[in-house]
Every structure is written in C-alpha cells, then in structure tokens.
Length: 252
Length: 252
Image (cartoon, rainbow over all chains, first blue to last red; front, side, top):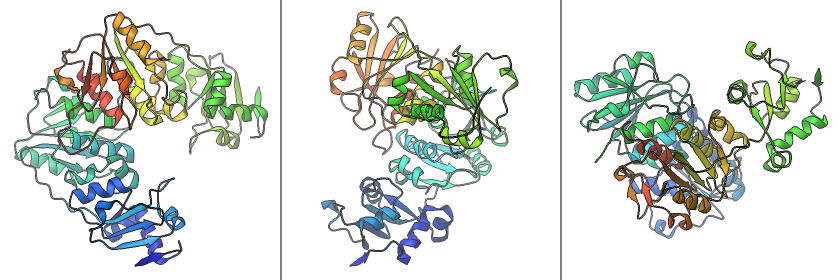
C-alpha cells in the first residue's frame, strides 16, 4: 500500500504540475476530483491511472472490486494537491481522452476561442444534454482539462467525443458531408427561429468578447442570432449556445 | 475636492463594508465597479451617491457635465476598495433600487433560492434579453447586490424591475390576475415545447441542487422540464431558464 505523508514527496510535486496546461500536456494526463466525476468517468469506461485517497474519505462500496492503483495521503497532503476549498478527499489521475471524430450525419458544436473555463464547461454540459454528437475545440479555447472546465461539465466531458481541430478545415469537411454549418453573429444574421432545423448541422459559437471570427463566418451556410427583446446588449455565450441548440431541435 | 490617500481612512473602511450583505443592508446602499456598469446605471436614470475615482482612471468625456459627488483616491486605496484583481479605477456608491412590481399582463420570472452569484446574475441578464417584465427574488436566494451577481448581470439589474417577495403569495396574486404559473421540475413535468406559450406567464426556477421547492410546485398550473437528449443528468439553472424563457416565446 502506497502512503504519502509529506506534501514535499516527489510524486505529489509531480501531480501538482497537472494543475497547469504545460504539466498536463507533458504527461498527457489530467486530474479529476470528487466522487461524482470519478464515477462519471468510470461509467464511461475510463479507468484512472491512479486514485489518491485521503484519510477521511469514505470509499463508495461499489468501488470495492475496482482494480486500480491507489495512493493514500494525509488530509494535509490532499489539501495541498486539491484545487477545492473543501476537498472531497479523492482525486484520480487520468490519461487524456483520445476521442476520434469524423463529420457524418449528426449535430456538431464548434467552439471558436471560448476562454472562460466556466463557460466552456457549461457549454459541454449543455451540448451533452441537447444531444450533440461531437464537439470540436478550435484554437484559442481554454484547455479542456482545466480543473474549472472539468467541474463545470459535471462529467459531460466523458459522455461525448470532444476533439481539438482547425475549424476552417472542419467547416470544409462538413460541407463535403452535406451538413449545414451555422455561425453565430449579432449582426447580419438570421433569427434562429427561421431555420427549419435539419437533423444534421454544425453550429459555431465564439469568444466572449469578439464572437465567432469573421474568417469563419464567411464560410458558413448561414449565421444565426438570438433575438434580444429587452435592453441587454448580448447573451452570455453558454446561454446563447443553449438557446440555439435547443431551438434548433424544434418540436420532436 | 475630496482626496483620500490612506486605506485606513474611515470613509474607505465604511465603504468596504458594502462588500458584505450586512453592510449593504445597514446603509441601504451597494457598490458598482467599472465604466460599463456605471454607464448602464446612469442610462437607467440611477444617480450614484458618490463616485470614487483613482489616479490612473481616464474619466469618459461624456461624464464632464455630470453633477455627482466625487472622491479621488490613490491607486493603492482603490486596490484596497476594489473586488477585482485589476481594478478599472472607478467605483460608484448607489442607493439600493426601490422597484415596485404588481402582477399584471406580462412575463415574470420567480426565483426560488438560487444561491450561486454567477447563476443569479446570468439569469437576470438572460431575463432582460428575453423580454421579461419583472423578476421576483424569493427567500433563500443570494443577495442581488453581491458584487459577482452585479458583474454577471452586465448591467441588466438596472433594466427591469427586480423585487424581493414571498413566492407563494406571488403565485396567488398571479392566479388572481389570470396569469398562468409554470414551475420547473425534472419529474412529473411537461415538456416545455408542449406549452402553447401565452403572452403572460410566471415561470419559477429553483435552487441549484434542490430545484423548485415542492410547496411551490403544488400551486402551479403546470410544471415544465427541458428534455435531456444525451447523458447529462441535468442542466445548469441559468441554462434551463434561458431555454424555457426563449422556448416560451415560440415564433413571433
């Protein structure tokens, strides 16, 4: 049984590096914290490389026959390793996901430089709920494995394929596969309610301040907007994504 | 000209108390930070009691004829008073809003114990965008004047009436005014797309973990849910509110 009592232990120092993008990319790993996220990963067939469990943690009974390497740590060491104010007492080290995604019939969400971790996580959770078949993260978006992104997904990052990609190339490929591609734009757009939602589409949502880049908007079949009936200047990007993804499903 | 150079100045100490609910309620005041929020307040006819401006702040030209009491402070004092990592250099002290709201024809959003400040702010911003006529904050919701709530509204708290109220009494009054009241519930609910959206309604959204309280759900005309097509267990409350508010507008 592995047991670590010092926060200065080289293993702890190494794992702490997984809080940074550089550390995650070097090892091709990431951390998830808490019972719920670990169970979501497990349900999706993702087996952590290592579980880190603190003294006070009450291991769920359903984990008793789980074949996984465990390191036990003191509460103080867990406090050091955790990103939470009140750690739940369990962290898993996982291999970064190796999803494959090829545009075929289906619903796709393309994300152009969304930078707030809470927004990206909520967008992924919403895409999962709305039955999206795959998410493409374009350049300039916050790292999928950022702790706050993961927490905001509430586990949805394990439910649908999420890949990094060049969005211009994706638009090209979706067009070749005869999938309509919609951008989102406040100006020169079309009210989303006018779109007779096809069962296959690609929807592009964009950066919090700048929206979807002009370069991409030029290549789409149409650019949609969510009408503003009151005095707000705009909608939060996760909110707009939700209204569009559900709006495009219409009556079913 | 008032100028304060010490963070220990009693005025600064007093204003810092406005970062707490108790301090805000004692003085019936609140703080807003940054040019955009202050301009939104001003556009809505709200005149701050005092502007606090730091050395480096570049006062907008349009403010030059503004009759308002100003206190100048050093950047260090601003740093002390600000809730932001990188303060914009301007804070306004405002009187708490004294909105009146009586249910008549229109769209109302009733908020039952939403506790996350970012969620409440985003819900208010979304309600503004979706053309809601008034928001009622039930007991147990986070304080409207919490700094993060205000920032997340992006100024929408100045755009529509927001009042505190007893939600059971509000449901009663809306029914008397012949306005349909919809709760939101994951179980025993109705798909929101089946509702032939009336131009007047009250929609109740609820706590992040618990949803809308059972006591309220019993009194509604119908309880709605947003269908989950994927594997997500639920939607974030601000996301669900957005889908419902826009979904209830249908084609216009």
